[in-house]
Amino acid sequence: MPVTVIAPNVRALLLQLTIILTWILLYEAADILAYSPHASLWYPSAALSFAALTLFGWRALPAIFIACVLISLRHIELYHPADSVPYLQALYPSLAHSLSYLCGALGLRTLVIRQHLRYTGIVVSFLILAAVAALAAALSGVWSLQWAGLLSDSERSAIWLGWWLGDLVAILSLTPLLFLLLDKLNGAQSVVRIGRLVPAIPGKWRDYAFKLSLALIAICCSMLLAQQIRQLEITFLIFFLILPAMWLVYTESVWRSFSGLALISLAIVVLMRLLQVTDYAAVYQFTISMISASMLYGTAVPLLHATNQQLKQSLTIDPLTGILSRQAFIEQAELVMGRAGRRNTKLCLTVLDLDHFKRVNDVLGHQVGDQVLQQVCRKLQNQLRQQDLFGRFGGDELMLLLPETNAKEAALLCERLRQSIEKLQIKVMDQQVTASFGICEQQPDESFNQLFARADKTLLQAKQRGRNRIEVIAADDLATF
Image 1 (tube, one colour):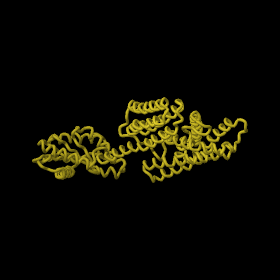
Image 2 (image 1 turned 30 degrees about the vertical axis):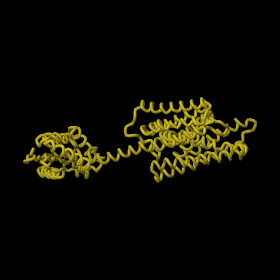
Image 3 (image 1 turned 90 degrees about the vertical axis):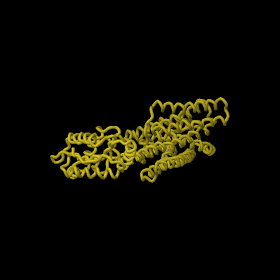
Image 4 (image 1 turned 180 degrees about the vertical axis):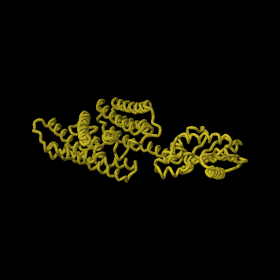
């Protein structure tokens, strides 16, 4: 169909238009907060440039450049109405901005794609490259304006620092969220995959709103005091914002953390302008930068927690079947057996495997064999008691530890399990998939290894006697069910 051929081009065009329009809207937001014709307290367009160029590389350059040219033309018309619009001059600052951020973004993108860095390394690289790219954009920007005849030498020397800080503050506070939004718009195809970093137990929205409210209250109170008292020392009260900000980032997903960071920076910048405390702009810009860097590092905590949880789960849970791994089963079984010995209660160990399971893998493939094993494990797990242990020894061999259960009770339970496997109606070459069980009751002072060895021999007897059956060894005799 022609639509399938055109669709990617249309999507790419829509993405370019989205970047252009968003860039211009963000510029207008920054222009409201500008304290000189060429410098703003906070320049979110720079954040979008860095995010888009990091995510899309060279593909985002045309959109960024076009947006810069359009704004440059408007800027020249606004501040130089008596002159004809020098179109060539509009290209100088546009090239300075686009190429400066392209170099920084490509550096970060290369490090991520080649997987040279872990997450914390990516954060450090982002902070360094963002600062360098913003400095390059500021210096090249003011020089390009001077070359175009739009700035004098004294004006250039006066505004480059404010230009750099405005760009850097916006990049540090807004780029992470813009990166996530652009990645989602692009179908979550980013090489960074930062949106997957979530805490093990996501918090409720009510809790998130409470933490964010505390941060905004801290901002309002500190900045209102600064407005009333008008002393530099009072402005440093805003550093207490680090407490709710870090609470937020340590306990919430990166989506919520980066959204909160964007709102925090926006609140500080807007209040700076509304309360007319721009004399302390450097303090507040430093605060945003510090909070941003701290929160970016802080996102490594949920990542570390999630990684530890995954590692812990991989050690205790068999990844294929979802039941206990061999080592975890043995460790828990030894604890249960020790408790049974102290209480002088009965306990049985069952070892089972699927009959002719190798045939399933050979005929239908290992993928189907894995699905069969998963289906059997789910069926058995749903029929076990809460106190029973269910684990995988290896391959298709499974283990059941049945506390407070004698040989007869274990036999009745395993017979129900055997029948439930038959009822799954899994057939290979016109033969039903079935299972054989070997059950042994624990003897006094018997270790797990000894009990397992007896149960494994009992399973072998079940196979030798025709399969699809159970064999039981009580503590004092041998019985066949």
